Image (cartoon, rainbow, N blue to C red; front, side, top):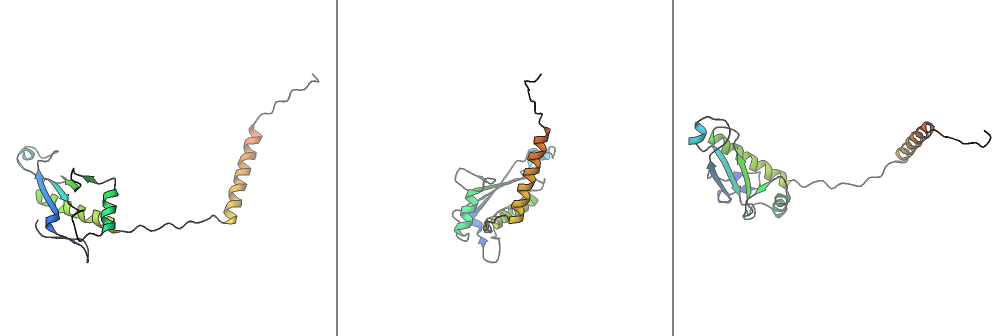
Length: 146
């Protein structure tokens, strides 16, 4: 697939930033596995990609769930089907989804404080629980009168 990958209205990944290899797949397929290369390995050089913003490149590099090769390129491996063409389509879809997730800017969390009634309720529950535990303890008193 030598055509560019369109991510959204503003970002298009050029074909020279993506390299693809077909290798022998493992798993079911009988003797067909031994003679056809249906597994797809897609390498995306996101560092050299000019259309990708810097914050997205940083987000991609910090993702722990992604795999990278020795040169730092993003590696996507697909062997879901026995068809090479279908695996290519799945690999490009996965790459598009990964880039779209990297483009999302996470919401900043606003710090909140619990309300007065929430604090009172929590403290009253703690007090009730403490009283319940106090009643369960056996108090042994030793008197000298015996």
